[in-house]
Structure formats: C-alpha cells, structure tokens
Length: 287
Length: 229
Image (cartoon, rainbow over all chains, first blue to last red; front, top):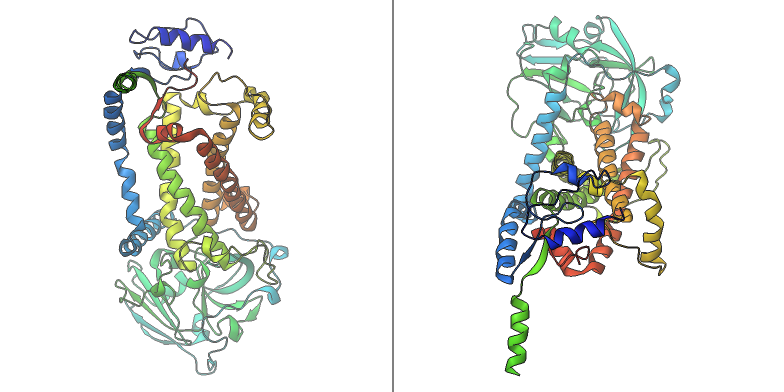
C-alpha cells in the first residue's frame, strides 16, 4: 500500500491527461478494474478533477438531482399517506408469501420428546376461554360452493382417517410452541362434501363470534386439519372444543377454534376477512 | 480594503481539486438503506414488545421490554405494517449496493480483508486513545472497512434470520440452520444490535469529519480530499 501516495501524486500531476497505467502493479487492484476509462483518479479509483466554484455548483446540482427518488420516501412521513402506503407494503408481502407457498411442501414435524407438555401449551383467546358450546347438540353447518351442504355431526367428521402430527404453532406475537394435534385432513372432508376445490376461500365462524377466512391452497395442504384432538384427548373447552382449524403453515390467529360453520366461497364479504385481520392484522399470515 | 476583498474573491474563484467519492447508486442505496434500517429497528422493537422474551410462552420470562418512544407503529399490527413494508426497501437497497460494488470492482476499496486486521488497532488508538494518526493512503482506513463490512454482514444476517422467521415453513431448512425458530429470533435480535452499535459510531465520525465529508455522501463530490496533496 505504501506506493499509493506516490501514485496519487503522479496522477494529480497529470490532471486532464489519460489515466496513467500502473504497469504490472498487483497491489493496486483498481488499476485492473478500470483500465480503459480516461481521466485521473484517486488512490481508490475515484475520478478526480479541478473545478471552479461555478463548475462545482453545477456538478453538485446534477448529482443532487440523481438522488431525487430518495425524497419519495418522505411520503411515509405524511400522516395521511402512511396507512395507505403501509397497506400496500403489507399487500405486497402477502402477494410474495402466496407466491412462495407450495401446497405439497410440508411443515417440519417433531419427535414426541420435542413436544411441549400440554400444561405449557398456551390457551389463547380473544374474548372468553369457554364459549359454552353444547357438545351434545353441536353440528358444523356447511354452506357455499359445496355439493352436499348441511349440518354435519362430529362423528361424520371423525369418520375419516385420523392424522396425528407434532407441529409448531407460531403466534404473531413471536412465541412458538410445538404441540400434538389430531384430526381429519381438511382436504379429505372438503372432497367428501363435494366442495368446489377451485374456489378461492374457506370462511369459518366460531361459537365465540370469532371468524376467519383461509385461502383454498392452504386448506388443501396435507397437514391442514379439522382438529378434534390435542395430546390424544378430545379438545378441551379452552382449546376450541369440539373442532378447530390446525394449520402448521399459518400463524396462530388463523387457527380458529369452536367452529360452528364453514362456507366455501370465491368472494370474501368486506369486513369479514377475519377477526384480527379486520382490525389491521395480516390476512395471508402464511409461514 | 478593496484589494483584500478582490484577492479573496479571486482565491475563491480558483479551481480546487474535487474527487467523485460516491457514485449515485451508492449514495442512493445509502440513504434508502439509512431510512430503512431506522424503520426496521424501531418497528422491530415494536414487534418485540408483544413478546419480549426469547424463551417459551409458559413460563414467560421477559428479557427486555423496549420503551414505547422508540417503538414505531403504536401497536403490534402497526409495527408489522412498517416492518413488512420497509423490509423491501432494506433488502432492495442492500442488494443494489452489493451488486453495484461487485460489478464495478469498488468492493476492493471497502471490503475488510485479512490484510486490514493489523491496521485496525492503530486507528482505534488514534480515535479513542489519543494515539498518533496513522498515514492515510487509501479512501477508507482499516477501521472504516471493518465497520462498513460489518453492516453488510449484519444486513445479510438480519435478512436471512428474518426470512427464517417470516417463512419458517417454506424455508424450514433456513430456520434449522439458525438452530430453530427461537434461535433465529435471537440471531435476528443480534443483527439488530449490530446496527445499533454501528449507527452512533458512524454518526459521531460523520460529525467529527465535518460538512465537506458529509456533503460528499449527498452529491458524491468531495472538495480537496486529504489523500490528494
């Protein structure tokens, strides 16, 4: 490196001339990166010139203009524009998430030893822990784009092969817990009721007035369950008895509990995208 | 009196040497990145407030609750809006910079290399321990190279750990590389700490080096750079 001060002095002396080629100098990497460009350069390859104040002013203005696009970011500082702009950002992130999703890509599953004890699987609810569902008379109302709509008993939903999986539940707050879940593969049930699998959404409503909507791609992912068991026991009241959604590919608030009805649809009613989503949380919320 | 004024005016009108230190792509990436990193840190702290722990939910042991004034967005969803919007600016400006530096060969003047290691301590001694000023023979001294290279490192780390958290199923292998979901959260936080360590030092250095140096990051041109005599 010690030769460089001399090299720069040399270049300075030849201002306006062609760039001096530092012949055979391996220790001046920039001599190799730009051999053909004319003009004197500093020790690290910066173009160097002599400029009068008026020239400098012109040069500075010119360069300042090139940065004009950065000023567009100031739009984020305008209160009236903030919400629409971040909504666009969130929508773009959702779009990217949806593009990344592959129906046949499975979420990681865990060994029994990695499953958190049942007592350490949090009860999470927005209103009441136990909405008082009468398990004796409970049915799931099936509506929308299905060939066999109607009221389905729990036994009818449990008639399909039971899938048991140890998967990670991730809350939007940032905590995660590996749990043991058992239920009917959602795609099995959707096929059995003759659901239009090309429809875009499944809407669900819950006994505690919670509601959600899920994209059909996710509903058909093989680990998406209509879950009726946790840790080998029927769901308790706090975890959504008798039936909840369990999707390892979605964030926690999508996993609606205490299901009472579902509807296959292509159109989401405005203000009916999901309880938290309608307050501003991300709709897609895919992991 | 009049002659003195004329002499000053004449002197001011004389051409002086200027160096084009920062091409516009670098300046553009710098300023977009600067805004983005501040938004990412503050909105990230808002998100962290929702669960300020690195352990399980039960039992929850809080590590550190970021104070409200430094948490952007007002509430968790607000923090997410900002975080998921500015992550694109953050990644975009970082990619633009790295690709530009790689394509032009400019990375050679700023990337910290093993041969720069021996020059770090003399710079630290000069800046913090009243040591002698090491000779200037390049646009960036070894300590600068270390700092700027570290920001790229933390940028890459924060992006990859962020992806491991944001898409922990689609990129489950990446989550596994970082040691699982909780470890990825820790590394994501560590990368934030890296930026938090860099920014004050960077700002102090900018303040110490004066307006001319700062202005070169706006227009690219620096008047009378010290490495040209």
